[in-house]
Image (cartoon, rainbow, N blue to C red; front, side, top):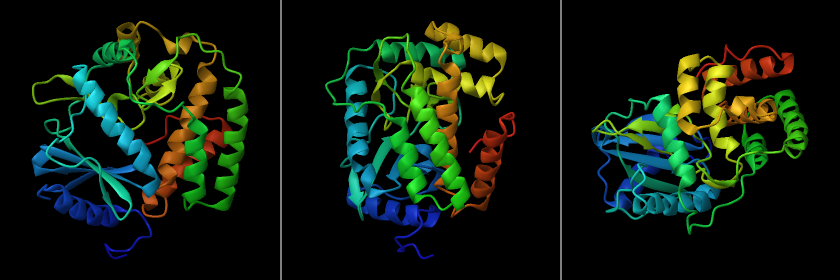
Length: 300
């Protein structure tokens, strides 16, 4: 595939878009490193001084515009979150794809403690609601969009679609006990990094929505409970920091299943460009079908 090809959204295509966006924004594309490829391609530039996010599809533009507005709202609140590179137009649109530029956080590889995560999330949820218009949380919309576009076996697509229908029915019956409000939407250890001074900082602001606060607590619980990526002590510190243990809520297992489905469909977007991702999707689906342990799921 050439970098000008508008087909598969892979590393080469994303870097092509980044180069054009840098020219429009007045940012030099130096020391470019791809950090990850998901709903966005995330690049580090200038040795980590700048991070750029490129939407996988042009239809990401509304959520990216909202992400920019959320970033500015959190800055005015003094909340420790990702800061925009204000010298650049935000977002830049290249061949329909939205591109943003953010101030980097040191080397981007130092994570906050789980206690700090819980305290930051509680602080975030305690902020006065923003003037930014946030959408209602609709997790199954993402599943539908991803399955429609993912290049995966037809049987896998059917299974995941049927599972989504089953879980949507169960989700509709849940009775949440925390007060609803604004959400980060994708709150996990990978999205709470330390800045150059060692301060924990929340990144990836494009998932902000309104809905049940239990949603933001789920991934840390799952990373301990389902995958073993956090220890028991680390999870207890998170729950103490926030002031609530979502695992004790009666709807936890249903919401955990919804989150697992989203993890599989998120990865399915890369199945056509990355054989490792394709194999991991099939492995994950096999455990979902069998109802067996998720401990074999590899982080991506």
